[in-house]
Length: 279
Image (cartoon, one colour):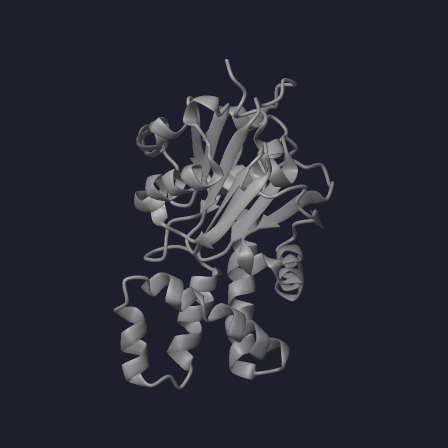
């Protein structure tokens, strides 16, 4: 866990800065000054340096003139993983800060306040923070043994019960981007569920229960009866109907929560001020 998340110094990040939100399906890159933004298919960790180099040329960014580069990445958690990616990006900026996508989402959504951030897109994870600044993680173990309730989990569950021709299923599961292709089915499943499709509703209820379990496992203890702020990130949780079902499931587990819209997104330069300050 990045210790800088435990509190925010008052000094501001240098200008200009660039921040990156690298997800399992999409990537977003935002420059602070002058304001510029890019959104497209994820290049993954391996392809990120080449993508940023192209954007630097397009945006006429000179690395020496950047204050810092911040990267929030799916699949990055340990200090070694953060350091390895930072080394690959060091030619692009004088200062590179790499954190996990859920850390950045928490920072942007709730700042240094206690609560829980639930992130659900292609994958899923919850991050809780208590009043002493200690963090608890639940989920985030990838599609093989984790990502419960995610877009991938919804898509996989649907493909198991739907009458999909075997030849089409094989094309999906043998594709290089099989996880993303499976996750792409989640939106259609949600639409079917809202229209009353019983099979789709069962899939969505299972996902909502799994996401509620992540929130309950990450929630800090000892709130003294106060409703716990819970915020969200990730494309799947843009769906208000899905979110409402998750909060109902959380409350059924005996946890009082206060759904709190995120103050900003992970790709908001201002939200990174504490982490991107110069020393």
